[in-house]
Image (cartoon, rainbow, N blue to C red; front, side):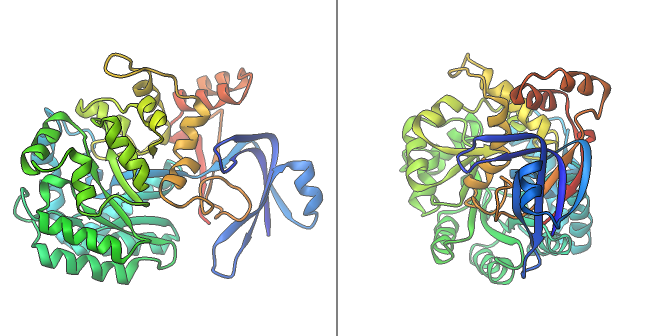
Length: 424
């Protein structure tokens, strides 16, 4: 058993933030080799209950839950910042050529190593990530995650049409490969498998139907795809699936909306779409830096909350422009404020933080497992330096309450704030 003393940020199960200016986090190693939280709260109270615990004191630092990235593409690590005229040209000119290289296991492993290093440097302890259409890309990712003891989720991308040579897979083989990978990796240590049709336009009806059958056969896996990212894409889906009421309805028709189904973006939805996602348990991975970079549109926080559609935050690297959750949270604040195309609102700093930690865990169906630092949860946490830069230090010292402190970190923070990332 080990204790860590510092300022402490944690969350209740409903998202209420709990902050201690002098806190203590006590963790212990379980029989499965995973550290879990034993106790967390005010230093004096927790120390009195655990007098024998050895305590490491991080003076002036903040302990917080590790960040959770709900949608990212590890094979796109090297194409961050690639200029393009929008989503579809960006896919054709940068994404697809880059992803063809992941047929090579050695190359996939090299990029996976860089990807994990970037996540950890930025305080991200769990991610739901695309691999590529190549099974070798999935094996390389999971081997790297397993070696580091990380809780990670990924899967082979399925795309049997409207895709270039080198990425286009064959329908039946894609389903066989996916099932083999599920059986090999899902539930092994801290790893989870996501059934991953790239997006509706790049899968035939037969492939989507097969993906839905896999999702029913393995109900504790994830489903991971994209929906309603930009208007050109929405029009294309309407042409390809004329019988469907909407983009989201395409996935519903093939059994791909359920708990643990995560759809990136979900910008161009109506209330019927939001209600369908709410009722099926599917959720949105809001990807603000990507949406701003590609000019895709603005996620409607008011609409999602009014209807009760679940959502959390995502970097969406490489369309997204940073691995840093601070950059993602700040971009989400900008997106919320935009009020010309949708109702504008200010998302509270603590809620932005929740959406990248415990709220993201809940959206992923991992509530009670990660993201809050509540007793019994896995002890993935980060150690933050609120004085990592002179201006941030000055601003943090002047914070009058938790919301001001968190917003200072969101606006002025980056990877320099993350002093340590501790994996359970």
